[in-house]
Amino acid sequence: MSTLTQSPAWLALDMHQAEMASRSLRTLFSEDPQRFSKFSLQFGDLLLDYSKQPVDETTIQLLLALAEQQKLADWLARMANGEKINFTENRSALHIALRANSPVFTDGVDVTQEVRRVLQQIEHFTEKIHGGMHRGYTGLPITDVVNIGIGGSDLGPVMVTEALRPCHVPQLRVHFVSNIDGAHLSGTLQQLNPATTLFIIASKTFTTQETLTNAHSARKWFLANGGSEQAIAAHFVAVSTNREAVSQFGINPDNMFEFWDWVGGRYSLWSAIGLPIALAVGMENFRSLLAGAQAMDHHFLTAPFEQNLPVMLGLIGIWQINFFHITSQAILPYDQSLHRLPAYLQQLEMESNGKRVNRNGETVDYSTGAVIWGESGTNGQHAFYQLLHQGTQKFTADFLAPCQCQHPLTEHHPMLLANFFAQTEALMRGKTAQEVRTELLNQHLPASEVERLLPHRVFPGNHATTSILFKKLDPATLGKLIALYEHKVFVQGIIWEINSFDQWGVELGKQLAGTILSELISDYPRAQHDASTRGLIDFYRAQQ
Ligand code: F6P
Image 1 (cartoon, protein in one colour):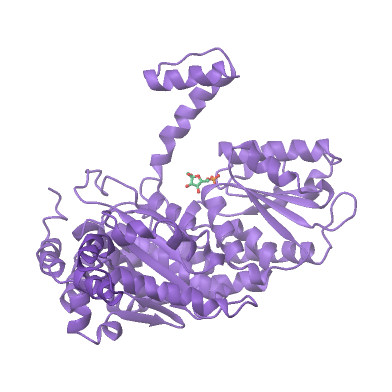
Image 2 (image 1 turned 180 degrees about the vertical axis):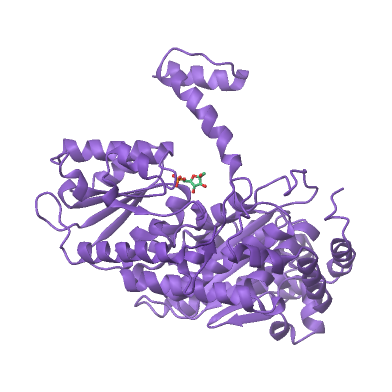
């Protein structure tokens, strides 16, 4: 048994869970009409409502005691002070410096000076592209940008670029290619003219197989379709921490946008990795995104924990995952423009906290996260909500929506939000056998038919959800929202005593893929494999 699960704060929550589990959410609401005001928080125009979670005042006090026991405040200060909290890679985790408005130090150096330099570089480049000063090899302005990157060098920029579609500049289309599956790149290139296309090769390490393979194929396409070696400079730029590898690839380091090892890949959209965002929406909007995140950072670092949105969101997650043993967390944005948010949060949460040993390298005996998945509403309602309402799986869900829409079909918006509110209410309340009976009898069905149908029409309810509402999905609000989740992940990692900032778990598959690739494209070497993997390799080869 670990010291965490035997600690006073943990044991107190364990005891309290039994009591809370015996009280349904319906009961909690009927007992206390003030639940919404007690268990919701507002930061600017962003509302976090966790009153549909199985909490009462004691729960909150006990969760805050756990945060105190785990020294959350100290760890927050250590992160903000640039300590090397990513201790397996000996790095700080300073994404807050990317949007800071005052100095942030690591190793005695104020990193915000470099941050400002690169932001200016992004600004100049964006202005040159938008203003038609940066032109392609035939003299035509750039009309299309292709970001080639994967994981953190793709998911954040894609999610934000999609979310901010109403802010897009009209003269530029931004595309994203991530998958090693050639269909992704070739499908994108089919629509493009090399003379007016700019490629951004985005890779923190500049060693990632998918990105480098796609980048080489993009260069071949460029050269085979009218481009020349001399023209590469105008059509290929790199975003990386690895200057040497960028120059080995053939991109002049003058065309490189730098970031630093203290920026984790999944926390990097605020750095030069955000170049495609700036190109899509303009620098002013990119700076508003940063300002929104900075406002959330300030709130996180200064607000008392009971009023602190990231802290409370993190602690509610701990309550669900560790005490109600929830393993499934749905992300349900009622906003089509946030359709990539679930994928983005999958990496943010699952790559950060998908760890099984604590800071001392000991195997933990508690869960460190849920499986994150989701889909935008209302599409999900017609796909998987049946399981949520009447299936046997336990889950929790975050529902998110803007109060104002940014498209011209304004009459759709109340319908969208009505569905959001109805779903969270239905999941919480359910429908009892008595309610179903009354409903069916009112339809004048015979009593025997009522009893036959009844079990199929009952909704157990008591499903906990968290709701996040905001006025409008503008760049600043989106910045706040993303930083909210970044810090929630940090809070949970501290409670769980794990390193949220490394990702060794992605290495084994990469290593094995390297060995297997040589077996797929040549006869030798034939490495040792289990019978299944051998069978799959041989079947593949027989089909070539
Ligand atoms: O999936 C593993 C990972 O290392 C992620 O952490 C990272 O975001 C992604 O690969 C891409 O890495 P890079 O930016 O170095 O190409």
